[in-house]
Amino acid sequence: MTDVEWRWLRGWSADEVVERLERASTIPLNFEAAEEEMTPDKGWSLVESQAVIARDRPEPPTRDDAFDKLKHAVTYLGYSDPRIVYGHFDAAVPLLGRPILLELKTLGLRYLCPVRIGAVRSETDAERTVFGFRIDTVQGHIEAGREWFLLSKDHRTGELRFHIKALWKEGQFPNWWSHVGFELVGRRYQRAWHHLAHARLRELLRTGNLERRPDAEELVHAHLKVDGTPVQFYSQRGLGRRLGGVERETETMRRDALLNTVGFGVLAGMRTFSAPALLSYQLRQQPVDAPKGRAHALVSKRTSQVLTALAVGELAADKTPWIPARISPPALAGRAISGALAGAAVAAPHQRLSMGRALLGAAAAVASTFAFYKLRQLATRQWGVPNVVAGLVEDAVTVALGGRLLTRIR
Image 1 (cartoon, rainbow, N blue to C red):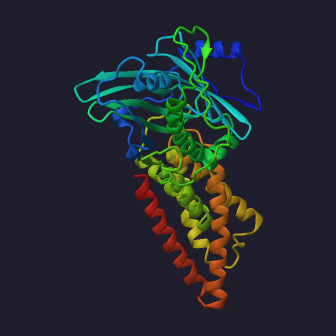
Image 2 (cartoon, helix red, strand yellow; image 1 turned 30 degrees about the vertical axis):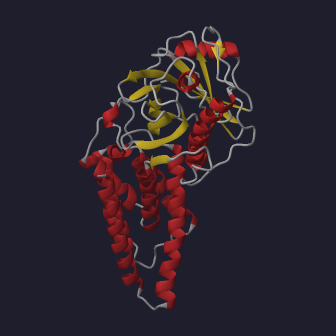
Image 3 (tube, rainbow, N blue to C red; image 1 turned 90 degrees about the horizontal axis):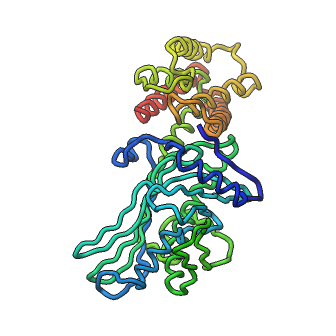
């Protein structure tokens, strides 16, 4: 498997890009699902946006009209703001199958992620002309999936529309902190990039600042001069008319994995062994074939049996007076480890654990530990609830939350 390349405050030379482009043409995809199988209920995120770029004469496209200029811009990645994503490619290579290196930029970091153009659409009927292509991610990319870029003209109205549709999952990350950073700011960069894509095409048509090089044999990129101001991070939708005129957006993010990670972390903070025990039980009930060496320990039948015994023992011991406080360093560390293990495992069943999700699960477990410790103190010391009763109520909440989480992951 190809590793994700990254650098700090510097990019890659032309010679390095040429070498990597040659390699990218043969690197296998980093996913196997067919496009019709890439649905949110199967774990895929959908991000989609479209906007009217302009209105031209109400007739089929002709050479050198607005559609033709925008078609050239789309082919040369003129829609991509190079402050966020800079595309390296060889224009002499045919569009279908063309390898592209996407240089992703964020906070001084740069990631070089290879893709290939896996499909091209060029269609005309009585009502509409459509041109565009689909990029497929290959091994060495921080995302996995497909993304369509389609330009269309309505012959009746002359409306020129640009449409972006991405179906994706998380791919590879070179280190755990890159994964955490992606979770924190990745969506904002993605949304800003979508808005700017439509704005760039609209500005291109208005100013004509795309350099046409149809016979170029060198590495090229669409050097479109649009706006030199810093990229803004928009945390909500519905701002499209002010930000590039995006009239329609769809965002079906794969939030289930993130919520499940937090949920199992919270469960581990309540009862140390409950989270990994429940998850291990579920993974045993619904086994999934994993590549050799990729399955984690929770899939093991023996592990499931041991964790179940420990979880039952913990429920009984919790009501006894000799059990140390859950916020004592050893107990807190145990709950953090449990949250990390279960939180990471539920995000990627039957695969090696993700460090980013492990940290999120551990953080949720620690927060849950302190929260339920304070609630237990409040119940027993101020409300006069017997410790055994308070413990049984917490057990009931633990079982209810665990049942809810198992329902979600099924």
